[in-house]
Structures are given as C-alpha cells and as structure tokens.
Amino acid sequence: MDKLIKRQKIRYRIRKKVAGTSTKPRLSVFRSNAEIYAQLIDDTTGQTLAAASSREKDIAAQTAPKIDKSKMVGESIARKASALGITTCVFDRGGNLYHGRVKAVADGARQGGLQF
Image (cartoon, rainbow, N blue to C red; front, top):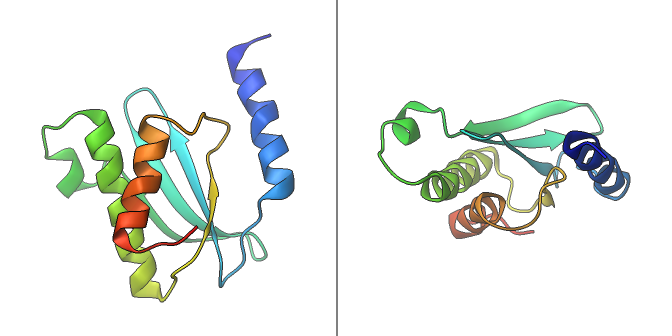
C-alpha cells in the first residue's frame, strides 16, 4: 500500500476519536519533509483559532536542526493559545508516529503551558 494512503487511513481513524471545541481545541500537527505546522482548531465551528509554523520569521531565521525548530513551533503555539485564554487542548498527531519532530512540538507546547 502507498505510504500516503496508509497515513491518510490512520488520520481518519484518529479523527473519529479526537475532536476539538472552543474551550478545548484540537492541536493538529502537519509535518512535511522541510517544515512543520501546528494549528489549534475548533471543530464545532470549523475555525482555526491559532497557527504556528517553522516558516515564521523568528523561527526560520535560526540555524538549528529541524527537531529544535519543531520545539520552537510548539512553544509559539502555546504562547498564542495563552493569549487567547486557552490552557488545555487535545493532540492530533496527523497520522504520524508520536516520535521525533511531532513529539518535539508536543513537548514545546507543554513547556509553553498547554495541557493535553
């Protein structure tokens, strides 16, 4: 089976169980080969409450390994969430293994003050 199709099936399986609300949004992580993106999503209205990525100017300007940039993305999304008054969320790994850069985003978000 194609790797992308397999990951898509895993994503659908996760999304059956994980849903975000306005008080407890879903922290969705998308990982490409070069970049990593995180969003806080309210699934009841279908709105993105906050977003962060490794393409932001302050993160992209740093010459650090991708795993360190991923941790910075997690801290950035946690800062934006606390500015909105959000302290808890549910984590959506987006079909990726909870390892490496995806785990670094989660660790950075926890360090920033998000609970999940």
